[in-house]
Image 1: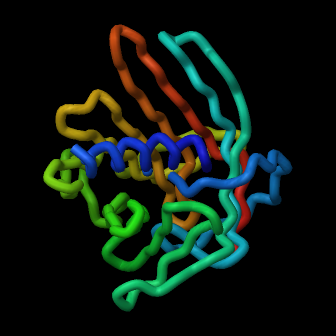
Image 2 (image 1 turned 90 degrees about the horizontal axis):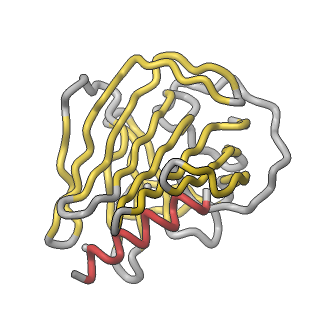
Length: 206
């Protein structure tokens, strides 16, 4: 999902110099047949595919609509953990009983972030270090219903990611066994509000 990872990585790179779902992909808009998901926090296997409907807004006015996708077609092992992603991207994912994690290649160094905690409760949060700054992940919901073009998903986890001293936020909903089903990125600068929204259009889980 190129739009989301471009904003997220650019922001984190800026944090690293001074200092998020979903990997980047092609613009293939052909839907795949929805799978039923599985019990993994974030299902990662070669060939898994997610297609998102995306909309960009400026001051609540719609600027553009488009479709983006992610297909898992590569993996590598780092410190004993297997990470999955799409060739050409700078973002990778892994999952386990402790949750789902995102790994960002910052050009020679790696940043690992916990993006989902299966046992999380509403109001819980955790802090991730980004260079010498901090990023906070808050749990806003653990049993929410989200309706998308791919269907209605119940029992979704709802998270908010924010950065100290930066107006950019990333809000996302994840369904165990499916992955990201909704995303909302927001930023305000010089009185201009920008927002990007994404809804799951289709997915295929091996």
